[in-house]
Picture (cartoon, helix red, strand yellow):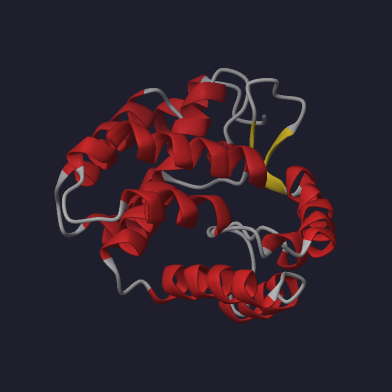
Length: 203
């Protein structure tokens, strides 16, 4: 066991707790971190695992926990108002740099998991990606009375639907979650424009 390398890696990824996202927490003076988001996603997948057929449940959790780790170096990019031109390439470079700090066998394992997630060819990678897209809706519903990242960035319901829709074309349970959350968010005024003008649109 390469104790020193593993300890050094754990120290390095501690900074994941400080990688800020656009969404706020319910303690709305501070942003959500990537670490909090990844935990929330992993918990969501655990809650629905019995409804998912033909997938490796352990791999779902592994993918959820590491899918954003390269953002330690690459940073989080908002899909609506951020510069996404080089996002994938930057994250691949960041992943190579980060996972190279691990012992060889673990480097191969985590690099393989991240490559699988990015390729979006396996059932597990697709489930995690789709579930990941739902988390900002849940987060913004939690903070809606005082803050919505969609209102703050002037993101409309139509923009969110256009961006997220392709991840749920295959239907199934996650599509049902998507439909329910999107409807609730629209009715509650989470998005920019329309009913949400009744809320604190500047927050």
